[in-house]
Length: 416
Image 1 (tube, rainbow, N blue to C red):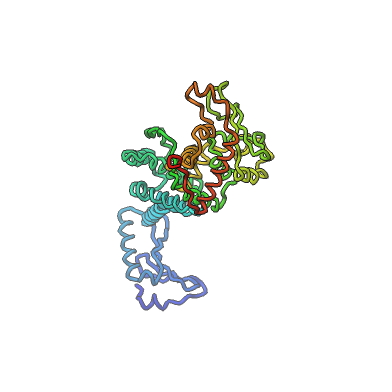
Image 2 (image 1 turned 90 degrees about the vertical axis):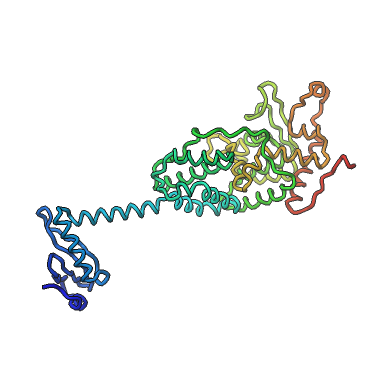
């Protein structure tokens, strides 16, 4: 006999599960805990099977009967309704996985994880580039289905606008998200390894360098960077020494503790040092006077790396030094990538000290520039060491003053 809504509603649990039949294989299973479940018993290919059809009262008696009729039609056509149900569940799981594995979701997750370690400007720029260039094209795509040519297309679109800096920064960001997906078990390979398929960036005539007026904000941004979590003292010290001495990046990277005499406030960069410019046999050693601020940087670092040979060793050890990109990475995190480079500190110091009235020939000696005029070079026998000592201290004091907000007015010799 068919069930009624009232019978279904009033069905009470007993000591054992009970089945209340509605006919056509449909029955209500009443569990001992009071739960009521619609089930359909049927045979397929000679085997007895049961099909779950929902829970009462979410699925009413009439709705359960409708599902029974649909199942019977499938059986009449030689199809197992359980197989259809399992296939639908699999599609739902795959759809949910696509959402959970989309590039945009993973990129947002990565950004949330890393933003506390970046400056506010870099975090904003990182996400802004993604929202403008990547998300509209691949945002909803499962990261496991991304193809290299899709990313090449995005890069070439950005490249077509002539913004090579943005292109390279965007590719680096997409690659970082893909590596994050691999590390968290949601991808197996990185489709962003496409650099060889992209055009080379036009060569820059000069190393990027901010203006004198921008120096105060730049220095404060560096202070903000040092307040971030997990900042490497080795990396930040390399940045500071490079800025304070106006030396070349390679000279700082390959520097050794034996090259420094902190009591005499001197750093002698040997001619044979790795990374020195010039042909072997024509290089010359270069003596760098150290300001009080530079000495303070080195003394603070000595307890960490003073036991070894190199001042700035690579954290992976094995006798290596920090990467040539170390200072550049700090500049990027500060939000100045494309506007300032580590080598550009030399131009920054040269320009500013020139505006302050320092002599050209002394500044050229400070930068260890060779004298191009052969006649002049033949008569110059001095390195202006003592004068450069005063200039180095003036430069360090100037940086401290403008960072603190002082209005330092450069000395104009033409007006003197």
